[in-house]
Image (cartoon, rainbow, N blue to C red; front, side, top):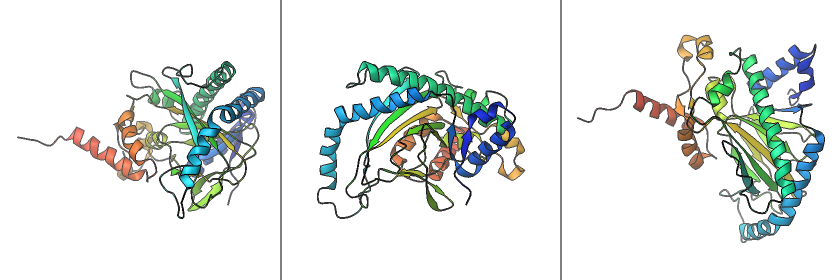
Amino acid sequence: MDSFPVIDMEKLLGRERGAAMEILRDACEKWGFFEILNHGISHDLMDEVEKVNKEQYNKCREQKFNEFANKALENADSEIDHLDWESTFFLRHLPVSNISEIPDLDDQYRKAMKEFAAAIEKLAERLLDLLGENLELEKGYLKKAFSNGSKGPTFGTKVSSYPPCPRPDLVKGLRAHTDAGGIILLFQDDQVSGLQFLKDGEWLDVPPMRHAIVVNLGDQLEVITNGKYKSVVHRVVAQTDGNRMSIASFYNPGSDAVIFPAPALVEKEAEEKKEVYPRFVFEDYMKLYVGHKFQAKEPRFEAMKAMEAVATHPIATS
């Protein structure tokens, strides 16, 4: 099997650009996951973000998680399939930041995360342009597709810790799922592993790399690319040692954005494959996803297709 794709973004600026873009194309078409190096986010900032997040967990969340953990494993003798071994909270950046409203965050934390979020947002938009270039879409198409509603894109960060688990045979760090949104940029712990994705029926590790950003594609990019790029099932395996840090930033369409396959890509498909994926409002998809996150994505797409059919051909009631 080929090695996990790693893209050095500095190579996109020089003579090796063509080869780097080919690695990116292959990663999107065949893997759905890849790591990027030399991405423009300073290592000092990443070190500060790691420091403040680990301190925040130790100071504000560890005791509460331990209470949850004791109850979760109490009398458990078979696999627990209704919860995850994680401590998590969410920061919203777009359309309006909520970081000042989240309790138990000090000024140092808020400053570091605001700076990091701004850098990640810029990187996400750069990656969307690169993906669009490989797809031969007009410049800026993917960002426009995320922003075609009245509210622009949505962007937020899930801050997670995966503490040591005494019974990883009974509980997952995070159950298997695909991500509902657009493009996901993850700053993960480089000392504690656990993130895995499904490729050709086999669970593979996403290798921890110092100062790398892990990128994976969400369901909306699968729809917009008409299946050329696909979202990939992934999970976090609980570990007996180490507390794994995960800072996952989701650059998603706006809630009222209308998502549909890019016409330029549909036209390239064979006649029988045109419009494989449905047209829907992102918020409607999210409402469905919330109750079906840990289930296969295909029934979600089919449900959206059924809604589209009803909207296009309403049933007569008289």
